[in-house]
Image (cartoon, rainbow, N blue to C red; front, side, top):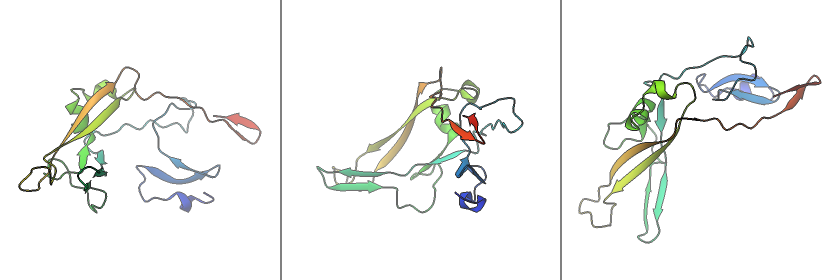
Length: 159
């Protein structure tokens, strides 16, 4: 980026329209460089308001069948029968965790999509029943992979 407008994705919850060191400042989940600095902000997710829109494309080469949600223009919120969007609250709840269990360190989770009776595989109606399941992989360490990017600003090394 060269100016703030280059970074404007029209969603302040994801990314501020702020260009710094030729990079857009995207909100992220990582340790603060200096937790006591005046520019350090702690953002807590509101689990009821965070929605994840899943888009996928599957090709069953043996049966020459393709299934996709990538061409859907609008999110369909669960519990809609053809849902493609799920609240974080639901995905966490399905793992038998509580938001308080993962607020501080985060979590590593897996979301699996279970397809029943794909079209052309013996289904009279051609209907595919979709069930999304989420599972807890790690809540002890959470998302704590660290890769430090060092750079220099006015001769001062920063991370």
